[in-house]
Image 1 (tube, one colour):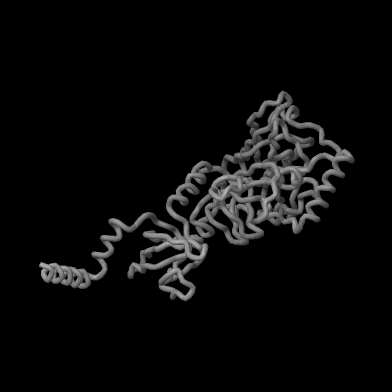
Image 2 (spheres, rainbow, N blue to C red; image 1 turned 120 degrees about the vertical axis):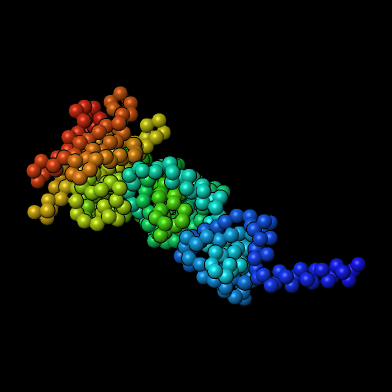
Length: 372
């Protein structure tokens, strides 16, 4: 009986070898595959093992999908056992930081779905590698993966949160510098200076990413690592005490990419913000000024079409509608009674000049600018 069993087993193994890997593939598909993963690194290697001396089997690129059958933590580094979708169905190990699992990817896609069709509020890039997160806090559970330095993105929303010490991203070098900064803040308070946003809050940005940058389409980034990329042709209109926070092209296709909308001089609606704390019921305004600029192609200069004469208290998003040179933009502003209203501005061309028609009751939304 024992001889018959061994003979049967040998024949079965021989038969499996004759049909190639298909039999083993079917067993793996039935019992081994636990998830799928997408490569997030620009390039990465599937290796024979997770050991330092392992050989490279296959180079995979951003966006490639892999089947995951196992995982292991080796010397505090997480590795996945994966199978590629190449002709040879290459199987080996890949470092976890190079991929994102389907479950995590779905969470990022859910974030992106929330602002589907919404106009980007601004554009930015990372000044240092930073974690892309599912929410605007530092909990390790929220980390999707780390975006590389220089990664670009569209900014869809942001929020202010009370400032906190964050060791891995805090730009303070030592306790002495922290103490010095705190002393400066306290001294300013004693002199009657208003509180500053960057002293009181950290800012978080909700961003949308192009597939060429990341398979995960959306997430949150910590603001200390983000640099706003204001279009170069309008950046010099910023003032030291009033920065651009949102901008949208008025004379371009609203469905065009951020790069396309900013590629040539044109007309812009810009929302601006001073660095002074203006919280009402614990909520800070996203902007306190509005500026509309247009480019005169004959004089090759920008001119101011319309701007607020006083300060406003407004919240995102900036909504842009229309086609060609005739558009409207809508924003939320607090009126003199403390109510938030959606207010629409009409943009049109009169001969060669652009004009803006503000809401008739605009006066009740503007407060005289305070002398700082």
